[in-house]
Amino acid sequence: MSPLEPFGARLRRVMDERGPLCVGIDPHASLLTEWGLNDDVAGLERFSRTVVEAVADRVAVMKPQSAFFERFGSRGIAVLERVVAEARAAGTLVVMDAKRGDIGSTMAGYAEAFLSKDAPLFSDALTVSPYLGYGSLSPAVALARETGAGLFVLALTSNPEGPEVQHAVRADGRTVGATVLAHLAAENAGEEPLGSFGAVVGATVGDLSSYDLDINGPLLAPGVGAQGATAADLPAVFGASVRNVVPNVSRGVLRHGPDVGALRAAADRFAGEIRDVVAGR
Image 1 (cartoon, one colour):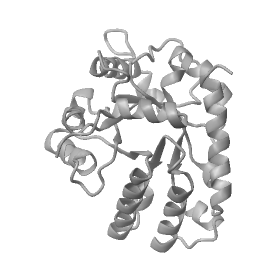
Image 2 (tube, rainbow, N blue to C red; image 1 turned 60 degrees about the vertical axis):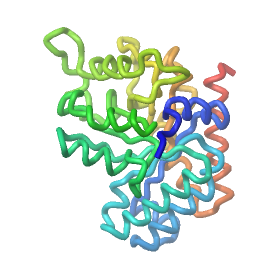
Image 3 (cartoon, rainbow, N blue to C red; image 1 turned 90 degrees about the vertical axis):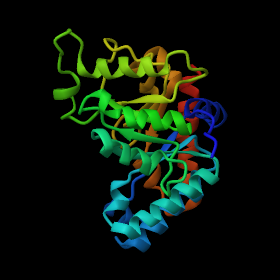
Image 4 (cartoon, helix red, strand yellow; image 1 turned 180 degrees about the vertical axis):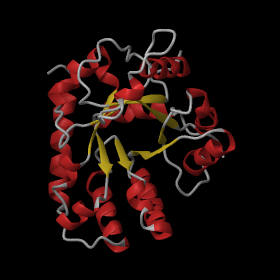
């Protein structure tokens, strides 16, 4: 099977067409309850497929959180497979939020699960953790290049525990987070219109002026909406790289369900606000 067009090129096109919004599919037990659903496989499927029905034809990216499907075992994974297939069929790109990270053949196994074209969970991109050393991601990088998929590598995350690792200073004077960004810039060198290897950079992390975010790749930015960041905050955080930011909104959209029209209206509102900010309006 021939590879897809590179993820970065596909992402750039859909961001330009639809705006850069990413909507998370995070079926927390509390959200299922808010929707009037049971915290079981049937509730999981109703929730997830309703979100896909509502917004997959209008947003650039959807990001299912694998953990909330995995907790139901094989039946939950079966729901996740259907969600991924339906979202991709509607024209959105799927970023699987699984944050995998390991070494050698184990990392290769994780990569094959999500990045192999024939895999039931094949996704356009996968979130991965570099904290066994960036080189440990080599099997995922290689397979992503082969299949036309992408990676989003944890770099500067918004969780309060992150800085103890990401802001730690190496012997060469560079922080760990900056080192991850430098590796990604090298992966994306010369790629047009956008590289396929992105960074996860939280929209709530504050001043990043000391970091070089110009990696010629996308920047997945969780934190917009319920976590406190707004579209208006993005230029201050990301500076000149704001055009390559993929802001993720989860609860800010999902809390409007189960009404499909309300979910669409919320996604359209966030997408419009973000599009205006990126355009400098």
